[in-house]
Image 1: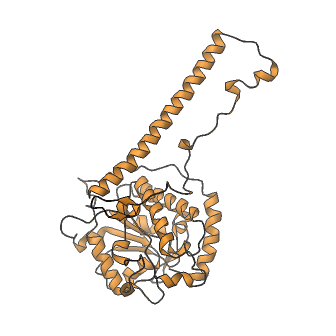
Image 2: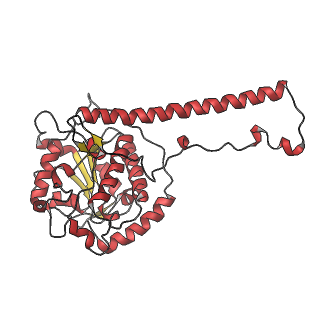
Image 3: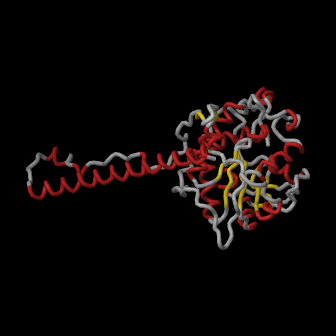
Length: 341
């Protein structure tokens, strides 16, 4: 817990430091402009016409990074050394630690909605012990389907628009697991991050009081990478993606859950006993372990007297999705042929 709190404190400290430096830079520029105006008023100087066009006020000030939103890649996250001398990836440090008390009761999930792809559909197929949870789960989707309002098909064959169905369920918490379908090829995934960030903004705006859990991309068996159109599905790459998702979750004020804690073996691969023959879907034993993990990694749900916890994040401005759309189109084309999840 101490490492988790320290990691969150350092992330937020860096963000506030960037904001402070940006504000200071703005004040310096404003002061320079005011000094230039005062100088020109009290100390007029005759300039040649060519020089007159190059005064400070006639120039276009260069833009700065602090006023833009860019999800092309989050700041690189490095391996951290814990107090006991062991090391862990940053997305693991960013993950919600195990509850100190007893696991939450199964009734906790009566007021939550799971948003995801066929991995999430497994909760509906197997007897997981969560029969009263709500599900917005659709085979072969990514965060772009949520952002773009795409009509998707549920496990029972009915169609719906994910965001509309999610809002209609009015959950106290949302569990998100999306990404496998758009990460099958070993290509740039900045478009995926852009859509994911926009999706979190939309959910936060529509459900301001809900707790939002961002679940990590799950591990796979090593042989999956050798399949056609699956060259991007391997542990090292998924760790990089999870680093970026953890940073995004913290920045958006969401809770990050590291599913690798119980799904991955010592080599970072999906445990054999949890893997279906395809190497990435889960067995019933995998879903039972998943439920147990969620029960031991949870925060109190919001009530009328106790709203959702403030995790220090903030909603950011809407990002420009034009480049993300082009990158996502290529990823979607590859995903449709492989239908990984």
